[in-house]
Structures are given as structure tokens and as C-alpha cells.
Length: 231
Image (cartoon, rainbow, N blue to C red; front, side, top):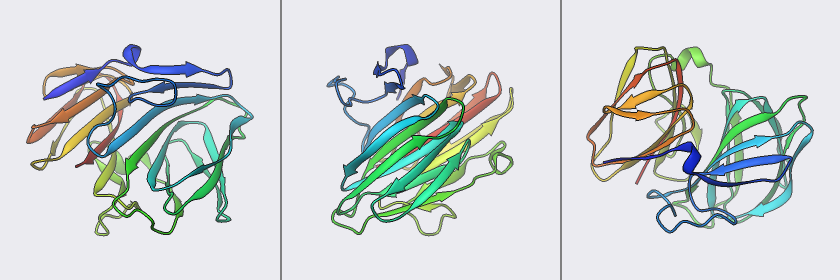
């Protein structure tokens, strides 16, 4: 099953400094048919104006992954962590027992990003934060694991049985991904257009995938892909 959620069907709100689109019910957007996809609870497509951002606010017991598409985001939290994550790179925050954090776009340009929330497997764990650069050359024509609950993956660590993957494809290229029985995938092209097992998907559309043993993704135009594989 491949359920396409076109970008123009997503909920969201324009706050001036933040133009947010929500793949799943979030804040004032509520759709009972789009509450979550397995353990994946939030996928927000955010555009953050220059010199603005999210002031300090709390979270607990959630794995929060930020994939920066353009620009950069600067993180600061109550654990004393501070860091800047640029385009194509990823940061993760395990909220655990509780943490306050702020996310600001200190750049002179709009920052665009995907913020992804996955339900934790370890409620009450110690909170943590990490960031890592992922050169796009390492993702050309194949999926690279960006964040994972599997210690064997060379990726940022999250407290969930899930993987966040990224890939870039040139027009005409294809990649195939095996989806284990009982697992679900959610795929979004950050840019470009693709076909997923023959189903068309445009930039920033979402594809909710289950009961597909193999996923073959073919780029109709140069594409940058982000996907979550989870229970």
C-alpha cells in the first residue's frame, strides 16, 4: 500500500516568521486520518525566516530529528549543548525525562527543514543531543542511514526502533529498499519528482508505505529523498 499525501493537502499555518506544513495532525491542524504512521508521530515541513526561530520550550519522551534542507539552524538547550546544523545535515534530540531547547535561524536567508518526531522506546531515559555532517556524495544513488536506534549503524543515535535515511538520485536513476514485514516507511522528496513502485510523488509530497516487501524509487528529475523506516 502506498498512500500519497500531496503537499497541497497538508495542514499547516503561516505565522509570518514561520510557514509550517504538517504531514500529520499537529498544533491547530487535526485530521483523524493523519494522526501518525506507526511510531512516526510528526513530520513538519518548516520555512523559518532569517533572524528568527523557536524560543526556549520543553519536550519529554520523544525522539526529535531535524533534517536541514537549505540554510542552517542553531540549537541551544538546557543541557548546555549548542551547535549549528547546515543544509543536508542532521541533528537529533532525545527529550527523555525532559529538556528545554531553542532553535534559531541566525542566517541571512530563509532556512527550510523537516522536523520529524518518533515515539521513544525508552520513556524516562536521560535526555541527549547530537549533530553530524552527512556529505551528499555519500548518499548518491543509495540510502544512507542518518539516525537510528541500531548501534550497528554509523549514524546519530535515537532511542527508537527506527531509521531515518537520506539519498540523492539523478534523473533516471533508481534505488530499491527492502521493507521488513510489519514495518512502515514514510518517504518525502525534499526536491525533485520520483515514482515509488510506479506511484508518482512530487517534491514535498508524502508517501505512507506498508505491506510492500520492496520499494523501488525512480527519479523523474534530480531528487533528494528523506525516509523513515519504523514499526
